[in-house]
Length: 446
Image (cartoon, rainbow, N blue to C red; front, side, top):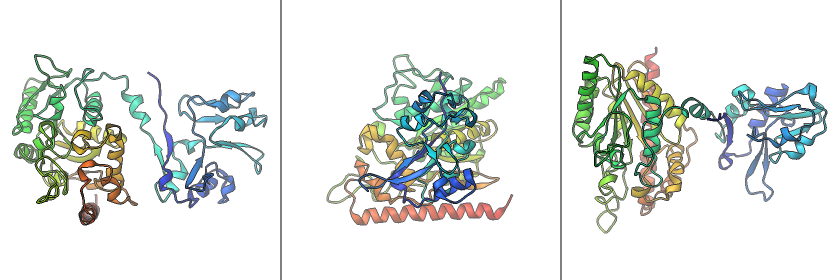
């Protein structure tokens, strides 16, 4: 398997052209605030409609390296950065002619070419950007660490097009590994063929079909039996929101109260999608479902969703966190903690999983919808443990309007301006409440 590298990502729609990134780069590389010395440049587009970025992309197959006749440029096999060796450079500038991104340029003040070197893995420009237009993506470490590990599910599962639940369970079980036992109550996950039919299963680990009402309790009993025979396994539940927030809540709540040594993952697609898109306890206000239709008497779900992750945190079990498949670095960090915690106590992960079929959006937009959930604060990414309290893991300090998320999703297409305003108010209030919990945790001290 090959190797991936960390990289800078530019979100042009968020950039206001302030130039703080260029000032920070100049300070870091030339000890001056003069943007002329910056190795990153924000430039107006040719049509003056927005901005674009001039920066070394650290290309996988770099033209600049191929054009360099003296061998002054080379691709670093450890960091992925294109290194420049001053002692070998002859200033022919063929590298600048070959770069399509204006990422390497001749700098008259120093008399040679300059380019971005990612500041050794801690880019100064990213830290200086006030609008979060620059992002340092380190998801490459996930590929490098886990790509060669065995997939615990076979190929050809019968998930709907665009379903990120399959993506989630494959990533999850690669990290958990073969020493595990899985509980999957009725829902989309067993429905896609993980539990199987006609004597066949898509799983390569022991997996069983619990009831909606007893998943956590049954899994805790299985874990107890493994402990009794002296075998260490990770007991993990892959459950939908209906089997967690509604019919299965008493079982999950009891396991959390006892702090049973299991890992419970709720894959939240905001409804009973496997049986006809019915509303669940975590279906948000205003959502169209088959049981909360849009018509003369009803305009989608009339009640608010349970804040199930917070409810689980209030149980004081060993670990609770929220996650999104659009932010896999965040998810992997939390999953790693959860696996370790589940050896001695209960870990609960609540993963938001948009459903193209039930939510009525094109399957190619799943990751975009996931990202917009976070960027608008419609969902928040945080973690909790009794010792440290609640803390944000991906705070969004300049959220986009929630309307930008709602317009992507067909089940919200009917919403009136008043309903959108109500949802925005609810989202804002939820973030205020979560911030109060983080402040409470900080005030308690270590």
